[in-house]
Each structure stands twice: as C-alpha cells, then as structure tokens.
Image 1: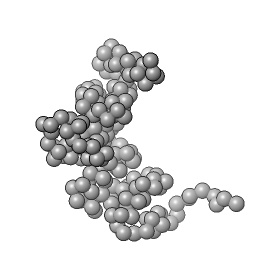
Image 2: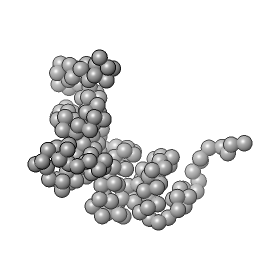
Image 3: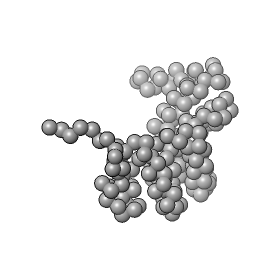
Image 4: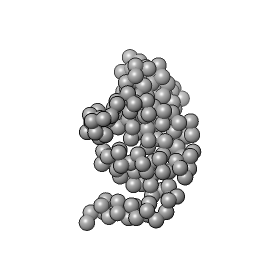
Length: 171
C-alpha cells in the first residue's frame, strides 16, 4: 500500500473518531484537493468551520475548492457534475477567499487566487491590488510578478520595491 493511500486511511479514521480534529480534516481535504477532487474536500472544510468558525485555512480551502475549475482551467462538469452553475462557483470562491484574507491577511495563496478570480471577473484594479499585497509579503513570487506585468504593462524590475533586500551579490 502506498504511503499516500495509508495516510488517507489513517486520516479518515481520525476524522471518524474525533468530530473536532481540525488538523486531520485539513490534511485529508488537502489530499482530496491534490487529487483534483474538491467535491470530497468541501464537506471537510465545512465541518472545520462548524468547530472553528474563524479558521482562515478552511475558508481558503473552500475558496480554492469552489474556484478550482476556474483557477486550474478544468471544466466544472469534470469536477462537480453537469448540474453546476459556473457563476455560483466564482461567487463562492471569491467570498470564501475574501473571508480567508480578512482572517489572515498574509496568506499569499488566498491573495493570489483571489487576484486571478478578479481577473476572470474583469476587476483588474482589484487584482493588481491583491497581487501587490502578496508581493509585499513575498517578493520572490516570480509568477505573481509576471501576472502583474501582464496586467499593468510595467516591467518587472519597476514592480519591485526599491529598498527590498534581495541577498548579497554573488562574487
């Protein structure tokens, strides 16, 4: 049996035994998300919020689960079945990611995902703001710099703060 499969089984048992085991639910939900199975992750995230209504990671997970088809360019019907409204997916994803950021404003994953969803909604100014907030936390995100360059038309080197320490020059 593979390590991932045995880990999944252990986590499923932990979830069954303890209705309040947030960490086991987060870990199991992440495995489902890594398998592109947001439908199995969603109930786990909702269970977490029943125990801990202020859990930023659960809100982020919900936002990513609802937005997975949009963020990863996977047809929604493949992930959720034929009866899914893509506008509903987008609205839910944005709401949950916004709540995640309210609870933990330094989560670059939420900031970047929300920015990408804003681009889908043609809210470029809001997307630029989210990407910039993310870069203030971690300027080494080259993919975010590229996204910002596309949105603003500004060269990457101009997007970086001038007083940011980028390490000692190699000799």
